[in-house]
Length: 344
Image (cartoon, rainbow, N blue to C red):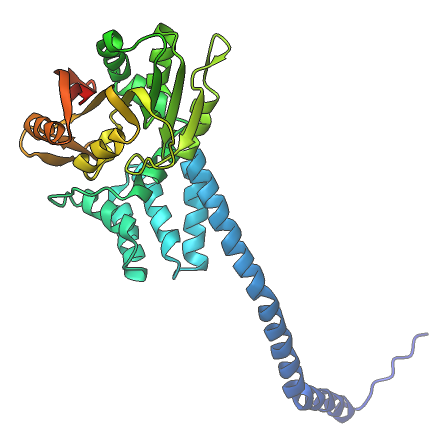
């Protein structure tokens, strides 16, 4: 037989009240302990959040330089949530939207970046381009480097296949009578080596030096080979507006479309004179402007020049014109100007 002993109801109520009292009495201490633990956890988390932000920024830059736009966008989007006050996170996120052709979101992020850092000139420039602001005549060097580093892996596929870009071949064909087998050649804005390949396929030359502002493109041109022979004798990172790091002179200088990033064409020609002999040959192609001496082309985000402006500047800088002609640059019938000059 099982005997169940029932305690008095009043005793049970008393026990419950005592338990509640203990909890109520201890509650302030427990809350204080919880607060202390939370504070400790938050303090421990702050440096980790900083590390997460720094890591995501580095990864974002890495991916955008590799042309992995979706991965870069994910990193910068996360970063704008972790550190909304970080102007460069918004700037690079806007760049990702640009590559995805999502222009409204790109504008928004550039505007946020500028509100956080009004001195961010590259953001202002990109916003001006998106808004088709008139009279853009100055392309920031940082923008040229950023874009060409990002496009380096896909550049040839894009310009050769999608835009039907055949200008390097045309330029070297037009220059063939001026290039001798023993010439030392400088390729300004060599990029991935499109002009270099045309020279190497058709000429046995003494040396070919490539210079470019894009380190990522130079990595590709440095490794470029034809028949197991390096196309370029050497490549150097340099801004063509400042060629002081180049200590030698060249018989022939080439440039295909890169002069469209020259904010002062007059100064550029004088700079090229410093690496030229008397009678050195310079061949280049730029976009043609039909309406202004110097005009910004919004389709390709580069400067275009009128024929008269180039002729007068060339004469003023003491070069003489050996050959000039119009050429079709891209498959949309965008026109360019090809000039071959001789140093006086």
